[in-house]
Image (cartoon, rainbow over all chains, first blue to last red; front, side, top):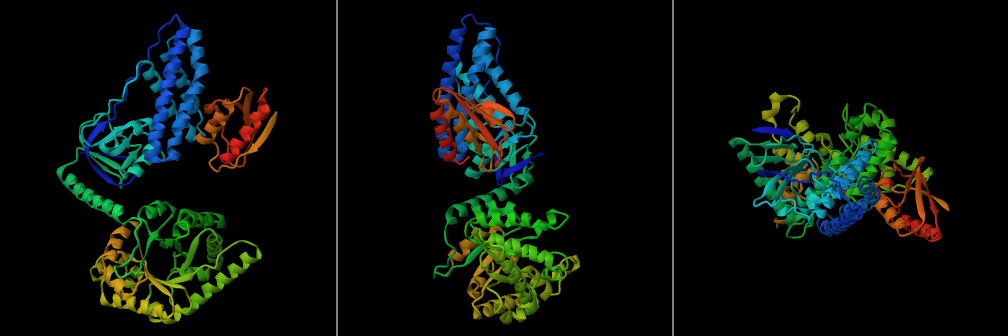
Length: 517
Length: 85
């Protein structure tokens, strides 16, 4: 058993036989020709045929991956027009065969692209140039397929895959793509995402893997060659679970989260950064229930500038296209809101960016670790100050809904008073459990006493929901308990309005809710 | 004749604008060049065009010489505006 680590460009698990991509043989010899005009005509015939084929690939790609990705083939066809002068010149000046002239032109062009080391996009076009040149050379000699006709489903391994190669493959036979080169933005990666199959790039797989058993783990970004029984068994179970998830995805994507009697629940996603957005959209979350803003602060040693923060919030607001995005203000260091109220300059910068970003979508602001009404009033005072500043500076913003996390027993006890102050509550069950049961999360000895299903927690949740509803404040859960499938039904019956969880839990929970009365 | 154009595409130069520019230029007999950052290339050739490191906010100069220069200028301007480059 050997493991090779690469970069995942699409998550998922695939198990099957490995097949090495066979490249068409394009060894080019330099030979002398007497009739250069005939040779030039031969080049043009091959080029025309190649351009026609490339446009056929364009039409196929249009159906498979869409216009934005298909466009590259039109560009490829145009590359060949650029070849004319150089190819004709080489044939005429050196009295050589067209194949040699095309290969030399492609090499020169690729070398020019390789030299553009400040432009990775252009460097990546080298593969494309060689690919179109190979096609012309093949077509001048009657053309031939790539010989990649698989009889069973395989994990396809290749040095790199040109767009033309991936488009020509029989996709029903491909379980996963693994390339030794390539990038996560390649055509192959995009195709894999559309096909919902795992793909790895930059993976140092040796040359002798053809025909061996393999496992592609798109979560860890590795391929396991010749796995042992135990590993194989473990991955088969994981693959079955993945398959079930995909089935749910097909069945439940785009459907409402609503019980049979018509009660709608807002099923939202928890995210830690912009990188999670794809996953949110993929799993069809109706909004973001907890956007942890700490990542912005953890990435830099210093506090992030207003512009850095603004860009991140604006991106999320825009990507979610009008869906609700609840951003939790800084929850670092000495306990959350207290850092905000002790260092108002940091807090106000964050509020300012959030209000600015609010003009680009549907943002809510949520304050963490609240224990008193005073804290909420103080935070709201800063919001008013920020709004006034923005108004005076003619910067657009919306009147953002404000909410708080209910994650201390104190907040539960005074939930009625707090509900008068805010538009929503989100129950943070992780901290609430810790403080209610006197469990220090850092102390491992206490782990066995930790009971997330303790009746005290469930009663606190009920108290919070009831208090919220008495004051028209919606109530959600954004802690781990929110994704617990054994409690979903109970939460809905208790009157919960929103559940926010990691994106991968959304569809299974939607399934449970849709099956409820 | 010459005219200048301000790049508005956040991605800067890439395959699509290069393709559109080359395809449009090829429709005309005039010699057409694009100059950016001191580098001058034939607009009818896509590869050298793609090699120009154009960024949003940068300006390039198009020079057209030939009998159909006027028609070419109009067509190129229209093509650039159409793709919002």
